[in-house]
Image (tube, rainbow, N blue to C red; front, side):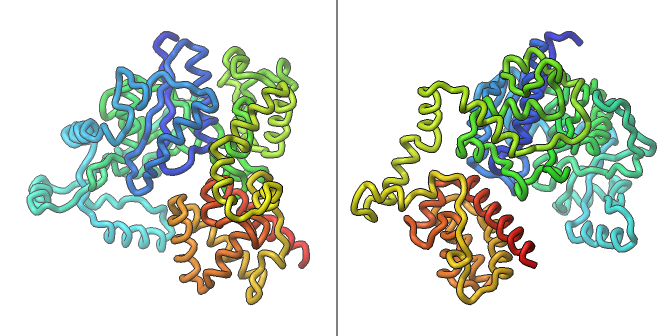
Length: 485
């Protein structure tokens, strides 16, 4: 295997805003390819249609381009191994599922969701790890034919043999999984779409991926993937599993404790060079003695980053440090560059025009514009209890309702009608009046009971920034409440 044929990929799923974890893994793949004269591939894994978000793919493209992580092959640029959207490759997966059925390494499972759930509950009641019980593993050809003739829905499962699987992780060495802990994984769902495991292996092989560089949460899935390579008789790629980004308390990074949307960081005024630099610090891939100041460019990362030096201890995603680093980059800009950075984000023409349209009929002088719109331009607002707390509600039930508001907003279409419908539905379910519900949200987002139209303001402010503001409000109020006890 020569350096010239190195091929790596990232394969995000379009299920929402692009995640900082995608950028972190994307950066490492990008550096690995550029250092070795290889190819960096972007593949969209969109077979989970229940979580598919139609606007997410473009947001992924925009976020990665904003960071400067350009790809050599992908849905938008093409390439010799396309298509690069899994939803356009379903026939390929069906053909490969048939190969496994034919060689006896997979089987049809006719169990209903109700039967599977009953089995799972029984296993948990018996304090056993839930896994498929193998009900359909050895069905006779006659029974299978009868089920198919009757049109009974089925999935395709891999037939995990007895024994164990050992594979090499390039950062950890050899890892062995006993097959008693490896489930007969569903490979093709009853709707004809593949699961991640089949599609991932088939695509990586057909796209000639030489190195699979991904997050360590996929280590437990790797024995299934290794088995599939063996079932097909294919050469396996090298596997590299990167340590997960962590919160300060060492828990897996989550939107509950840190903004995880790349859209948030762009809209909040972080510079792409600072974000890339910060992600490059994660795990220790840069030589400490040469870059003790911790500030370096993408070009310097291409020259000096070494994936083999990544530390397995979970790198801490320290937002305070990112803000400090971003400040260093802002101060290094020329006056003109700083002005252009402002004009491209929080003072862009598009943003200002949208805000202006909300205020034109609500002010008497231009000088009042700032009074009515300040919340659009500040990093946070801190409404006092007399502003946000409904008269007939306690602080405890109000904060509990705010947590429910966050959940409702996370799942809604970010349009005025989508936001309004989600909040109203929640209010009706929780017996909160529209006035209480909306005034609470207005106070959290704007810091005041008086503002331009709430839903329109939230749309302009953006989903990522709005949710971050509401989460920070909730955290601050919970902390204040606990200190009073």
